[in-house]
Length: 335
Image (cartoon, rainbow, N blue to C red):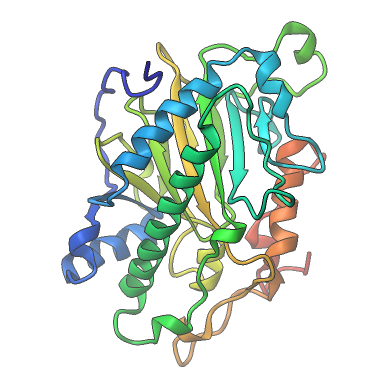
């Protein structure tokens, strides 16, 4: 049984998030213009004709199968402070607990060095998720090239610009239940639930490919219109920019601020692929994208320190807001 795609279609709310045709965008100035405007305003667009239909269908099925397991079996692959991969049901965003369960994984390096925690009770799970990961990596590379082309047009050599790296990227399976997944005893030891299914935040990496079901609830913060719906659209992938892209473009493009509203009536599923910089990447404005009289707005910092700060913040309440790129602005005090 497909636990996800049998959902009733959510009511479509007005939205300013454009839908981009991946097959046409690479040679269409009109599609590139829509990407450029979206990336400057809120950092979101939808992608159709992406060629991932089979991998997405299989991923939905196995994601539903995993979250349908009882808590004892899911807790067999529970993440820890030292290993952020696996199952988790008490993640924090902005020091508030989200109403969701997640499963995180990376591309396996080798059987002996694989730090992923694969559930043993869902036969075929690993193979399906690796296929989905590889397909997502290919689409992410094409999408990032489009974003650069939309910004730079023909003014710079795209091959000289920083790219993402599948080896440091991750996939997250999300399940948003209608009630708190923690028992009363477990809730005594954790932060209380906040007022959102997922609280407002930005993604730390380059860009995110997000699959969402038809339940709805995702919103983006636009510069001009405040919070706007990113309404579900059959056959599309949601694309949003991350912090690394905002730094690389020197604030020309915006890291997408987004949230998920409280879920009502029906549980929600989503799956983001986080396209991240390489493990040893330096984050700083890219010279190929700076104008002749434009000064960099950020000091240099490493991806490794930045992503570790986000991982630590999500795992436990450190008593302060999570790490943000604003801490590395040149006019601010160094972190």
